[in-house]
Image (tube, one colour):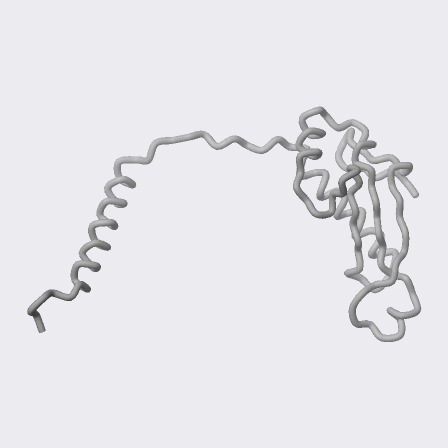
Length: 142
């Protein structure tokens, strides 16, 4: 098994990966019952090399059901019929997961609503109120 290159300067050594072939779920006939084509990939994310401290903190704070309590990331890949394609799919999903945390999230800059948007909002509220007034039953009216 070889190292997984996440991004330039960021990689996961092969020693932090554990891969095993498992039986694939779902339909597929006799082939599914005989051949273990699905891949279960376990990656120790604390072993990532070249990860800055901010990305490491974002990664450790991640809420993902594939992230186990001990910091291991678990992927089960069974989309394809062959072991090789499932192995590549599992690695691609690992890379995509870690890459999400490399770039810090952009912070929203608070802005005031424009005068035109405030006016549109008030007009919509008045129109809605008018519709509701028209729907009301008036006493004594037929």
